[in-house]
Image (cartoon, rainbow, N blue to C red; front, side, top):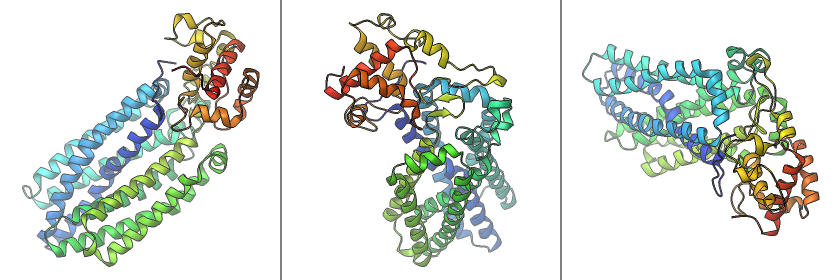
Length: 441
């Protein structure tokens, strides 16, 4: 456990989620846009329609700037936010999949260099060579998705890795193929919605109409196939995830995904039927709607991992809850309950390692920061505010709060309490203070 990154009103996890959700737009655009570019460019050469290259130039510039400037910056933001929000979790992933990430970075270098070469050589090298550059970029970019999905899927369903310690037993887990195909189909919808936005700025009316209709077909196909694959993905999820979806995922998130898919299909259909009526502002609005749907989907994906950051290994509060003998990992539960979390965790103020009547409330707040702040905020307003939760449960006395902490592990989305009885009393004292308004600032 490291110093806690406490983010008022939001929580560190939500900050990470916001950055990661935005990153999906440029990252999925980077894996899909060149496929559409190659399709349009091939058609331009095959049918002798050089006017289509205006779109290629504009779309490639969008890809270069948005995906490889803003996308790269948001990718760095994910690493920074993950490192400060859950350093032990990101450390565990790095130690497990360092060679996976190293491989992905090799293909990322192919992407970064490839987009510059592709953009700046358009019209300056022969057609066959330029198309080869596009194909190398498209395949290399999609390969980064092939690798990253294995790590993302591992964080939902770790497969046999906890038992064997084998890289590929965790990488090719039960949700890998369904998630890879799901993301692959949906990436074409991302490419389509941005292609339509770019097409609204083209000068040639005929090209504008062609690009919009072609992109609309890609978008409809991607969303329909993605919806079908989503049902397969749901079937591959662990049983515990289904329980969380049925009992804990808010209805607004489920509705958000369904409404987004419905609106985007209608948008693509309308674009196909009346391409020239779609202007720049509605096209940008469609991107915003897509972002809202992605946010809902990513929030659901985060929820179904609870109470873990890595299932069968580490809880969301960075406490190792299970042995992984094959990797030499030993659970910390027994030691924390015997010695105390305030004595084990580094950076706890020295005067709070031993609890007495004078520092009990302060010690309780530190215990709450360590064990609860990954998901909860301590203000009355915000996302999952602890004061409202305490009032809702009805914790008015310390003894009642201690009993609540004894049974907290029975909630499928919350880790159990870890620590000594004295630390439990301190945390209970702090929780009660949240309800009566005497909480520490």
